[in-house]
Image (cartoon, rainbow, N blue to C red):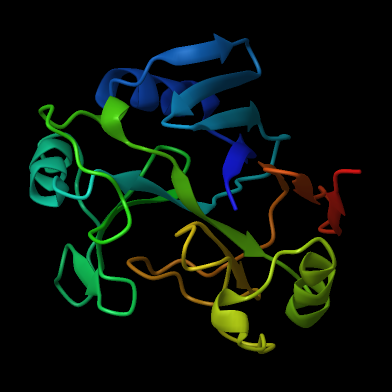
Length: 226
């Protein structure tokens, strides 16, 4: 699985555009008064202005080169405050041999930089966000988790290690060999490295060979290319 495009919404579009352009020093690919796009590795990341009164936020993760976690952490913490969980500003996940750090952008998105020590490729260049390799995680907050898991199976997106999804908690969807996952979760779950509760917000995702959408009314839609 490969996440080619992510489209989300923001109630702080201008501040978020400035953050990705000026703080993270990522080039803006396209922009208008109501949207902008940045290329982060092999993933195109687009934000649209949210309707008045809506304050959507999301969680997503971008891959850091496998040999540059400490360098990336040093770079980012000079520019933003890292989020903490039990006073820790990083975490190691032994099940996937990866380290992560978290911070928020001006839209309130929970941004994760993850260094997959065994799966990502290394870099010989000094770290810079332009070396981020791709979006390797995108969270999907949904009303009916089990139903959505079945819909995703119908387009060939299965839970990691083909473990059955549960109605509660977090379920990783995707194959270990790809090291790219959709994170399926219900509402009202506390986000890791945050005190926020998960809420359904509209988004669209383009995978290699499939499309996923959560509409403004919270309806989940997915389809596979013919």
